[in-house]
Amino acid sequence: MEDNEVIRIEHLDKMYKLYDRQRDRLKEALGISRRKKLYHEHYALKDVSLSVRKGETVGIIGTNGSGKSTILKIITGVLSPTAGEVHIEGKLSALLELGAGFNMEFTGIENVYLNGTMSGFSQAEIDARLQDILDFADIGDFAYQKVKTYSSGMFVRLAFAVAINIDPEILIVDEALSVGDVFFQNKCYHKFEEFKSQGKTILFVSHDLSSISKYCDRVVLLDRGKKLAEGRPKEIIDMYKKVLVHQVDSDMAGSETVDEEGHLVQEDGDGQKKTWKSRLTLNPSNDTYGNGLAQITDFCLIDNSGNITNTVIKGDSYTVKVRAEFQDHVSEPILALSLKNRMGVEITGTNTMFEKISTGDFEKGDVLTVTFTQDMSLQGGEYLVSLGCVGYRKGDFTVYHRLYDIFSIQVISSKDTVGYYDMGSDVTIDVKRAK
Image 1 (cartoon, rainbow, N blue to C red):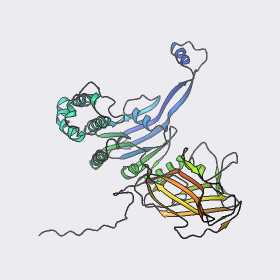
Image 2: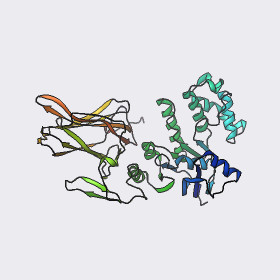
Image 3: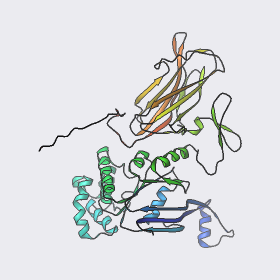
Image 4: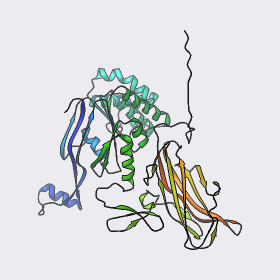
């Protein structure tokens, strides 16, 4: 290993054998198969190399099935690689499957000593850390009860407290910072920041891109078991956003074009055109209704780099484009956009009427495209987008077409404030010290 490296991974493979039939697995185990292979090879990791230097916080991101958790399990010794080498320099603690080593018949205290011993600590060292662990878990007298009597919340609190208070040189984290209630999560993040300020080395896997952006010095992007890229958080997150909508794929060939009506499309290798919405992750069970006199035929969200995506960085400008096609005469249609939180509470929204935009009259076959551009001031999190085309027909309010919760926006934030949106405060302080 080079100077200052604490983790080095070289040409790592992890292959699983997938059998069509259980008897094929038995035949191969007994060595009685006539064919060479009775299985298909699936590579969870393929020729992955990376290194982590002392004091770095490195994030690993990727879609489900990209190999993120697999690589952490190999680093921590939970899994063995099919090929390649892993070198570790330093005492390591892992937040993977919390409580995986707990004995349900033991008390909380007994499990603290069990896990500490498994991590290589002596009884004296565990004694010195015991009160810190119990204070962090904050489960009171339940620490002296059998773990099988715990609620799921108490269980993960104790498991996290044991793992985080071992005081390792290298911390491995896999989606473990969002356990318990909001107050315990806050405590977890404070501990995480304390580790970082102490110069500990952290390898961090998460779907929470806000945390990746905030904490990581460097980010590695995995896609279907291969390392696609690594670099600074913003650039790699931008690339990940393209992976999510299949715009970055080494197995796909394609180019963007504009049709006669100025509609952005993408051609695959077979010449088939793709619409805007095909490049978003859509809600498969959205609610849609209307009388059909107009139809929303296409839509997208575009970030300030010009990418069609479901992800926006807080503070950046972004655009939602909505395209409606008319099946009959419609006068002054109103195109609407609204955002809800994950609990279904409507947070904000607007439409062409609120914005005092006159859309005009339309006949069958006419197409209207409306562009909403605004700054993203919502807090980090996920929001649901609804679109609508409505209006007044013979004096009555009429719904032509509505798409409820049709796609989501993930807001990436390195600073969240209280509530749903950021006031954008400019804060100054004036300090006068006593002489």
